[in-house]
Image (cartoon, rainbow, N blue to C red; front, side, top):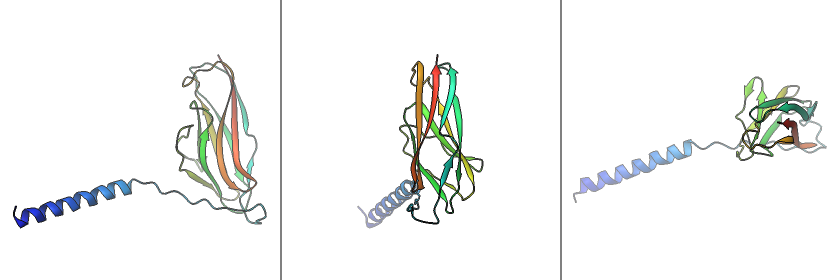
Length: 165
């Protein structure tokens, strides 16, 4: 083999490796940093939820129903929401802050989401129940879990109940 062919193969190989690295590394999501506080901190986030339960009433197995839960940051620092998941593959959670909707999270989604609610601001936790995914009839309760950086409420549970016909 000639020297030029060997140099060409080496350059081509390096180019393929470089492009592959940037394609793989560029697609990686950065994991957000969650601020940590103590209950003794005077300046910290504080979550206030008017309710964490909703009765969706009677519904057909083919229907989808949602409940919106209002939360507010009554603290002095940004409230961060993360690790959103649900109790069942038929139940989904979504965060809505300032009209912007997060992706939808379920039981098996790996949530790298970190929503932020500024002091004095509100957000919505939307819980959607889709019984057709895992049909169960009668009284059913499902939950969505949200981790917060409020040291007094590190995990909130939003529960819905339905009577599936």
